[in-house]
Length: 333
Image: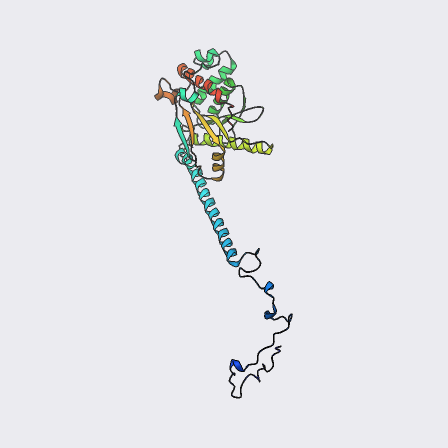
């Protein structure tokens, strides 16, 4: 209720109903403090120009922050969608060019001296009868007999035979490399892997080339490299579980086998590559995978002859011997 004299509705209007001039209205008396009027608020309680106290963000600032949060969310969604599309594209592809290119992986071929780091290939440390006798029936050792027996099966697999090349590779590694052998790895999708019996670390991977078994084979190079990356990830997951520092780089040797004809690989795997594959992202740094195809006397018959002829057998077994120094080689940087 107003405290001004004559400020009621009846007293401020003239007889004619018109409002009197402003000068005719008597001045108001200031209301006492504490009656709830806005005019009684002290200067200290008035809101600042920025809105609220200094610690409270303005409405404009809140709108900007909300808009930035929405933009970040959509940017993340676009990134995840792009990554998912890339992964589906890679998974559907059967060509190594697309799969390896998606992760900036480059394959480069090298001769034996450059690949193995030796001027001449070393002599294989196998029984002499394997280098001198052609057929399995001429072997005196049961282990050598089994090796050549499985070699013949791998060179001439029966229809729908799935394990001949795997059996041959397993017996060859058991004979040549004194390490534990595990069978088909359902996680890395490689056919044979050599593991350290003490640490359970993957030391060597072998992937069969099934070009002669199916009309639409998957590329063995892409499968082999994927197996190496999976082995690297598995090792680091295990080290984190045991509260140890993960490795950031490892060179994993690998082999692809078409029948009994091998191609050798040196696959460098880094933390960046493993994380990029895990997230479906394109790595900024390329990964160079080096390969070596043994130089044989009759290259046009490589696939049909394999390790059957004695001269081919000696060269390929020498390559296996030279590969030993890369097995269980860890590089920590």
